[in-house]
Image: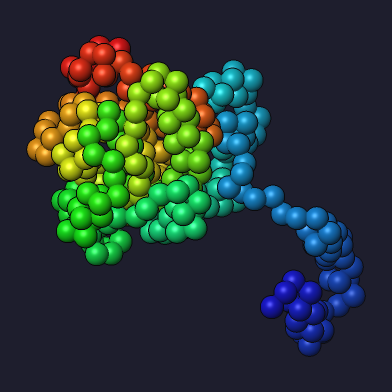
Length: 296
């Protein structure tokens, strides 16, 4: 049912209730305003609430120190200064919150588009998780490759490379789709400029960070780097991280991993992140260390 049909039904109901001319006259102005708003919506488009920059959004009415508060908001995209309608949130911030929550859910439950993976020239392997539900409820299985994956990596990957890079969906397919196309080439080009050889990149479906340890042992790489989607929040669903380790082994302490996080358009710029990661890998190879053992 569209808005015109709804207005027709309301008019019919009012007519059947014998609404007086006075009532009609009183409601004429709001009705006219509604018609104008409707026309504006139909002629143009309604702004996507998910695209609102909340750092620039300040909705408090009659603030005591509005300018100072607005200036503070520029330091971080937090939901502050969004005002109230009585004891409730205003409509726009409420819709923004719900849109962000929906985007986060989509990022977790949707798979990375196979067409995108093919476009990036990556072959796909899978962990021991058989489905997204298993992946979310059994993190331990997301740290282990299935038998077919082990066989495929041995067949298709270059063995004993200096650096092995791969991509994994992690907890955000949206992060992979939004950032990998810029980050992965940036790393590869940066390492090439340093004269560092790389292995065959690929994609791990239903992967946790820890699966990089098994990838490292299988390929015999000195340094292993995984680009993985991070758990989405209510500020962005497109945050990706790069976890890097020198001679990673299964069961090693988490402290041996180095991480570059918050890679997204409003955080660490994807193209710049690629160059930064390549530089970190170069230092790792020189120092023969990673994680807390590496002093940058």
